[in-house]
Every structure is written in C-alpha cells, then in structure tokens.
Image (cartoon, rainbow, N blue to C red; front, side, top):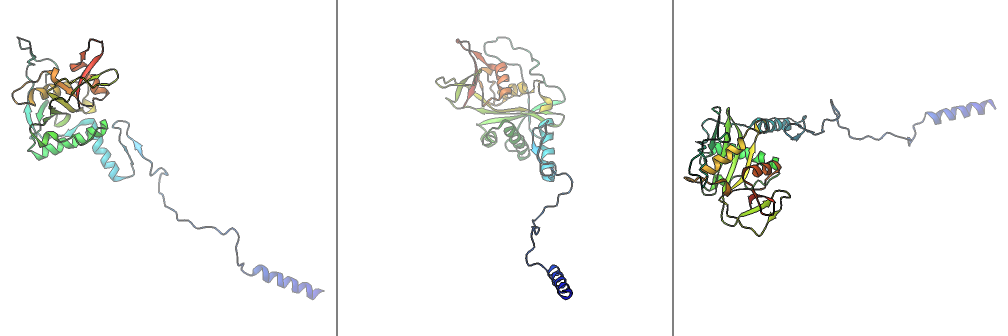
Length: 272
C-alpha cells in the first residue's frame, strides 16, 4: 500500500508539472496606439470668435486657424501700393438742383481709404481673392462668383476699404445685363417672379471684418462702388440691387434702398 501511494503521488506530480497543451483564458494580443497627454488629442474645437473648427494638436490646423482668425477679426494686411484710390463725391441724386454736402456715410477718416482693385496687378487681385474665399465660406455662398471683376473689365469692379494697413472691408459690384432684376419681399425673402425691374448694378458680395462693423464702412463701400464702377457715371442708389442678401445684408438693404409697395410690403431690389 505504501508503494502504491508513493507511486500515485509521483504520477500526480508529473501530471501537474507537465505543460498543458491548451491553456484556458489565454490573453489576446491587440495592436495598441500610444497616446501621450490628453485623451482628447483628436477632438476638434470651435473658436468662439471666428467660428472656425480645427484640431489644436495639428500644426497645420493651428496655423490655418491663426491665419483665418486674424483675417476674420482684423482684416488682411494690405500693401500701400495696392489698388487705385477712389473718392466718394457728393451724391448727385436725380431730381436735386442743389448738390448736397458729404454726409457721415461718405466721410472717410485720414487713417483709411477706399481703393479699386486693378485686374492687371496680380498681387492685389490674389489678396482680394483670398478675402473673397473667406467671405464665401462665412456666407456659405458659391465660390464661382469670386473673380468676374478681374477677368472682364465690363463685368464689374472690386473695391477694398483699407484702414491702418489692413483690408477691413470689400465689395464686388457687378454690371448687370437686362432682365436680371427682381424684387424680394423683405418679410419672407420671397422673390416676385413676374416683375422685371431694370437695375444697373448688383452687389455680388459685401463684407466687413468683425472688429470694424457698425461703423458705416459697408455703406461707404456701396457709395464708392456705385460712383466708380462705370467710368464717368454715378448710379443712383435706386438702380443698385443685392445678390443673396444675408440677414445682416438684408437689414442694410432695408435701410439703404428698399421701397414700400402699395400692398404695404417692403421690397428689396435684388438680381439673379
């Protein structure tokens, strides 16, 4: 009996010490990614001031945001050699026998000027197009209307409001062909399809950087553009129309040259 017990213990020990052919609950190996620092490394953030969404962990994104932020809030740096200076003269409104003096809407301080972008000057054209790209992104507007003024001298003009060495406002004014004019009901933005008013100029885009808004710059740009787009002609504000006005643009149009219809509706001159 003693020998059998010893033999049984020896066999049991051998079995326990022998490697198992199949190990239960063997850990599975998965490929891992080393993350140093915040676990939100890939999380996008949105700038509350300029509205751009970007990753602050990406050098490319960070540089793009810095450039966009500066442009959106302060305007683009502008060379003093770019553009042809234009001036706002007394508004020669039809029907007036006495030329009025310059109003506050026409006064430009010594630290600022309005220039017309010259299509044959590549640097200023490219700088303006850079601004227009940002403007269209901000307005969710199509980009295929950016450069009409730089390709055909009879298509229209672009004007820039420059203040302290920065382009803080821009307007692109289109010379319209016949039958493009429409009336828009201000209340609901509905277009009156049957009416075909004949407008001469159309405001394709108008923009002022955030830090310079509510100072009358947009109005000054419109006044300068309607006096300088067609050589030798001052276009009355009644013949200026608007393209795709945003909420702010609609408010400006309401104040600038809206009309009241016999029905009581307020109409905005626009074009397609």
